[in-house]
Image 1 (spheres, helix red, strand yellow):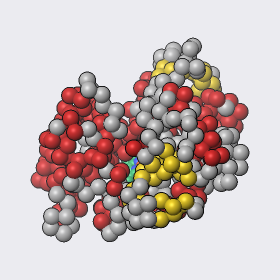
Image 2 (cartoon, rainbow, N blue to C red; image 1 turned 30 degrees about the vertical axis):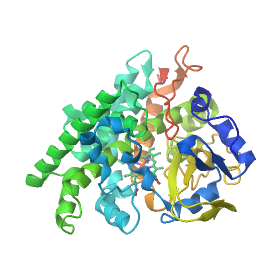
Image 3 (cartoon, rainbow, N blue to C red; image 1 turned 90 degrees about the vertical axis):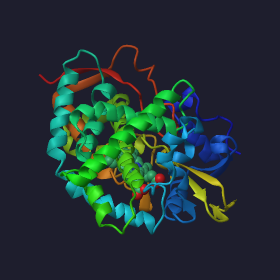
Length: 410
Ligand code: HEM
């Protein structure tokens, strides 16, 4: 049995790490009776790596957005999530075929070519943010940046970006089962609007291809085996690219800044040596992962760390706990921007390793470089430090807003 402290409380949202430590003390595999209607919870780095390396035995089927959508959204909205081939939820050989279609657009080299433009967007956002006496790092910078970047990559018109952000947030809310009764009509409308937009964008690129990701996907579907990617599949693919990198990258920037605010010596080390930034971003990812957990479905009777796990069971991989596993990372609760941090699990592991990792890394690196170039010090705005609103979903972790003040370099 898992220790009594249930997740999903405000205390847990503010700081899940004591709970993870208590799980660790209780043993490597705990059965939690209420989470996900009963699941085996893992906390050790090595066990999660073993699970993620075996996608047939530990299937990703439950990662499909539609599996958790409330029925009340209506069939016409849910149909977009039912059949399509999902990169996130598939296994080889389908997964390999799907991933090949987009992997070229996300190699570190291709993404590095975007860096100057990402820097330009970051500078504009940061200048506008610092013009205010008190600003919200999330609303003013961490939220808009990834939306603008992915919307541009996909080829979305600038005037539709805000719609895109809203649709992306609403789909995520609906799939995280957080839509309460009164939200449902809005969530439903967002799903319908997003897909109407995607359908027409895909149709348009079929006739007039452009130099963007939607065109690349349409082209790939045309050259693929007949019927391999249906219009619904194409929409699901585009939707995944839109959604997967939004809130996660926002939270990397938010959690990273919080880590530095709470560890001023690490801020000073970075200020003195900005070339540490790529390493610091890896440490931020390890220290406070934006993706806190993954879910897998067991396809055959097996065992993990000597515990029998039956076919059909759900396994919850607490990535946030694996990154604080003292067997893997010495002094895991210490943020250390010079730590040689290899193999944190914040981007997953194995065949589903985050496709957008190179992009997220560059966005965070550029944002912090540009911030350090301009400001000497940042501080919590009055009342903010003890009152940070956290996202309520336990799979994803990050502050919903972070009100700060900054002192610019002379
Ligand atoms: C997969 C985290 C940013 C696109 C994943 C997975 C994780 C993750 C943990 C593995 C899921 C699994 O194994 O079930 C993150 C974090 C990010 C981030 C923490 C930011 C800090 C992005 C961005 C994009 C993206 C910017 C795209 C623009 C994807 C896609 C997959 C994925 C398409 C599925 C890959 C596959 O199944 O083969 N991400 N992600 N992610 N991510 Fe990210």
